[in-house]
Amino acid sequence: MISATVFGTTSVGGYFANFLSSLTAPELVGVLIKSTLTGLFIGIVCAQKGLTVRGGSEGVGRAVNEAVVLCFAAVWVINFVANATMLGLNPDMLVNR
Image (tube, rainbow, N blue to C red):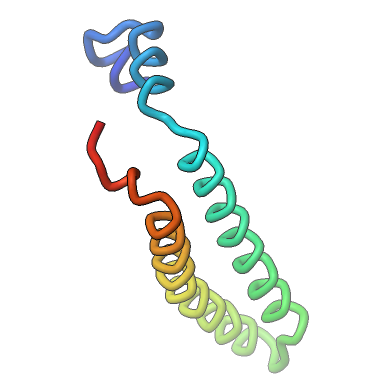
């Protein structure tokens, strides 16, 4: 919104009118579910890795590296599954508006 209104030539009202006319309820629900699942998974994995770390500073570094790699890969999987489910249940989302 900032790039369109402050740096561009679009008004704030025009931006929101266009945004709200193209947003549908299934898209909003899908985005909320996907972001909740992603955040929950990242929080659980990082908390588990942090609470079970052993070996001093080297162990902390290893645990952080493992958590980052695992979360990075899991975000791809969660995104794929959520998008496939969302598009399978709502095929009209594939149509550009």
